[in-house]
Every structure is written in structure tokens, then in C-alpha cells.
Length: 246
Image (tube, rainbow, N blue to C red):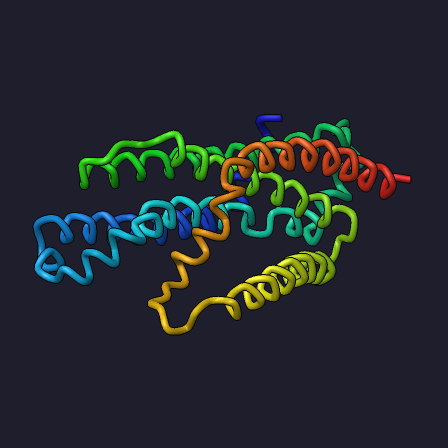
């Protein structure tokens, strides 16, 4: 197991490092903006401070959420194993499909857990700059993204092992997201048509209001999706490898 985990780390370390640098840069910019709102140049502009304060969640969550979402992709390790012939070679060893899939899932979960730790540390630092603390609601939101990211990551591994073609997997993923996005956009457009255009309108405030009713259910739903994805993706991935053996 340790050797398999080390192999995945070697193959994906450059990708993770680049993502980490970008997220660290964004986190630094967000913290500096928060400080500037309090005692810097931005503090002189009340309109800017009011706008940023109203949408503070963007600065609070985006760096950590971006790292979690980016870490769904491990830099192409799933497909590099296929292209290099590693999976074909592994059939000649004592490695069982269950161990191969298990090691891949453990590695992906570990990488996303590291991204979660980064998110929590950043949120603490960001809160300290403004005298805030971490609330249960903040933890709920970031853990929801964490569980959803792991669920999608496991699903992506299963797609890679079943189809062995990156293009097919991408079409399925993009198609799924596209259909969901189209349905959501259509629903939002219908609701926007009912809004009085003569009043001041803020799109972010509108979206927050629309999803406020279901926000308490996001974490349980994300955790349930994580469990379902872990079980089904593991079974599907193992069967796909065994099918290739036969």
C-alpha cells in the first residue's frame, strides 16, 4: 500500500504544488484585502467596504474551496497509469484489484483532506484579521465542499477505469454538469422575471436568499453522497479491473 501511495504522490506532486501556490496567492490577497478594509486604503471608501462586507463569504471560502475542487483532479494519475501500461503490468504481480483501487481512493482522500486542513487554517487566519471566529455554519459549508469533492473524485476514478478514455469521461462529466447547470439556470431565470426591476438588485444577495432554505441540508446530503459514491465507485472500479484481467 505504501508503495502505491508513493507512486501516486510522485506522479501528481507537481500538479498539487502548482495548485497550492495559486491558492496560497489568492489566500494572501484575500487576507490583505481584509486588513486594508480595516486600517488600509480600502477603509476610506465606505461603498467598497460595505460591498465587500456584504459579500465577505467570497473572500472567506474561495481559496479553500478552490483548492478542494482543484484537488478532485490528481494531475491525470488515473490516465497516466493506463497510458504507461502500469495497470497492464500490475496483472503480472501479486497486487489485487481491490488493493489497487483502495490505494488510489486512500491517496485521493488524503490529498483532499490536506486541502481541507489548508482551508480551515486559512479561515482561522482570515477570521483573526477581522476579529471573527469560525462558526458552525462556516464549518458546515467547507465540510460540504470537502465531502462533495471526494465523492466526485472517486466517481472520476471509476469512470477512468471503466472507459479507459479521458475524452469519454470528460464528455460524461461535462454533460452531467451542463444538464444540471441548464436546469438551475432556467429555474433562476424564471424567478428573476418575477422580480421588480425598479428596486435595487444584487445578484449575489438574490442567490443567497434562494439557497438559504436548503443550506442546513447540504452537509447531510454531501456526506450521504460521499458514502454512496465511495461504495459504488469502489465496486465499479474493482469490477472494471477484474474484467480487464479476464
